[in-house]
Image (cartoon, rainbow, N blue to C red; front, side, top):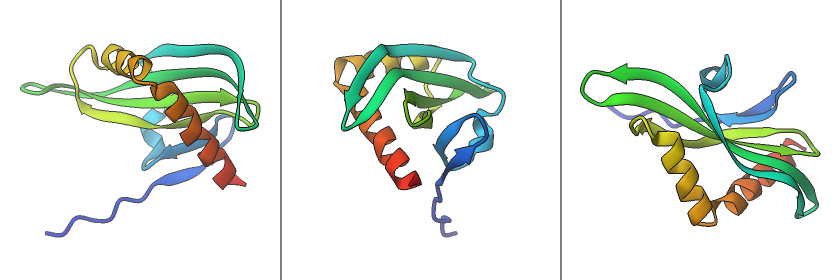
Length: 124
């Protein structure tokens, strides 16, 4: 059986800004947990960024594999917020903390901001 091509939803939702996810319904109801990676204002490529965080959405638990998590990046800018997929899978109970440490230790914050800037530019 041939896999269907993955399509990504990039659009705006009321009071939310840009959501760049295949299924934006997955983040309905708000995150189960968050980790703020950066707070304060700085300008990146003409975009004023005020906060960068990772958000955890607990989707289901498998008896053998454990917790299935969806982790998104959320970037607040002067052009509106952007939320997009960062990671997903059976990552265990410390998935959000592990992801936050990885991003902080590997210059990942600038990559999240750059991806958000691109999504905002594509929005028009």
